[in-house]
Image 1 (cartoon, helix red, strand yellow):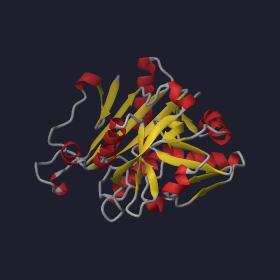
Image 2 (cartoon, helix red, strand yellow):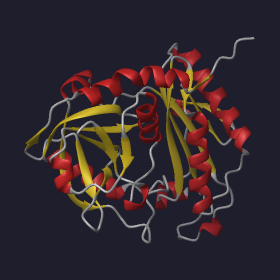
Image 3 (spheres, one colour):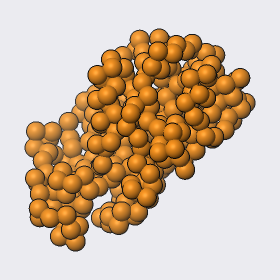
Length: 293
């Protein structure tokens, strides 16, 4: 396995960063998780645009142009697919503020750190995609946008991790997080959807969510499949009285939910239809790694 760090491809065992890197010391940076299916990168441009947008908001200057970053990423994926003899993979693209001192001041960090990791991933065993996940409603709330915007995909994930620990302690696979007004936002690493009377619903960005690439894909898929969908405020009652619930994420893809707290749910036709259509949607929206001449 080869890891890209600041223009160099290193073996996994040699891939290291400084302990003074502010991504490590303070979570100062941004990242993207991207999937590779059948030698093609899913929604590559959408992920890179979000990365550059997140970096701009926190005033982090990425040391590569958009096209340079795209080329570095594709080349790193290509080398790893060939070396590992695989067709499917997960990409973790990280840009941190870089090496500085032990103070917070980002001006002390002269050169950002850019890392591209390509590896395998499986968040949930196959049985969960067939039988569904168990969720809880977390006691931890999502920070409001005036504290730390959830729309920035930053390295600050402690809020999510605390909710995940709460889920682990309850023997659940995920935790649903509410905002300060008690509305549904998202899970610790996934967006959430409900289905009510055949209509697919998901919380809008302004309630405090990361606008997931797979989330947006599901909304696109609904249009292609003539399934009515909308972004709308969802409260706990809406959630617990839905006919179907599912979550989406780059790592998770589309996963049905069988239980929230003590409420049981069926894996309905709408969720199943979206799961079945997802591979075709991926095929139509991916960038080939190996270009045929």
